[in-house]
Image (tube, rainbow, N blue to C red; front, side, top):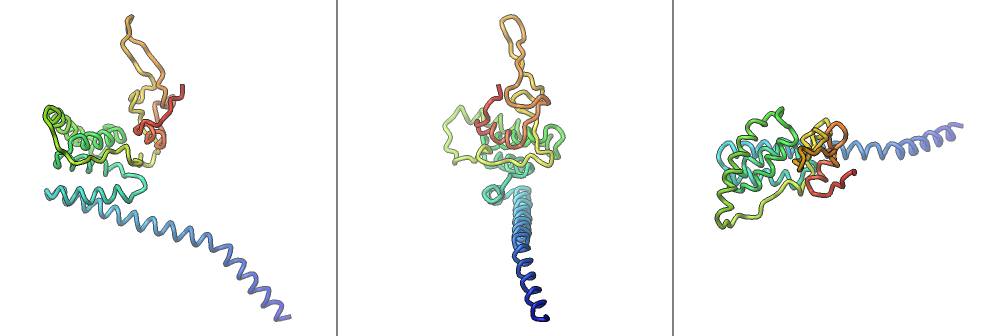
Length: 205
């Protein structure tokens, strides 16, 4: 009788261990992702440090490392990368990433005011640059990356500026057309936003 109980116990233990294994594997994966994310945030902070110290090439290397290894680009990185790109005279790249930050955060972001200032500087320098031949190195544009839209998971539509209506000048006055991309509240989901900036979002009507 004892042998039967022991056999039953060990059989149950084996089955339970087998069933619990996928949960342990999933938990381990989550822990590893968190460790990786923490390490990447340290690299981001390190890049900001080097940028503030005036070592913009070192900062660029740090930011690029984060871009190459992160799943979704943190919104703060779009600002820092855009700002640092100005110092490297990569004005088109700077404009692209700073615009991304402003689109994501609007006027309420921690760096919104600063982003607008750096964007104006980059645009002015880019206009100057267009008038002469430039041998700039290849620039990294944000359309190649998935941008993290933050906890809300949504972004104000950059096409209609959140109005859900696009106004155009017509022969007989203003013409109004419903935005073909956002919902009735003028929002895009994060997935839709990333598709839009790549030119891959199909209009709804």
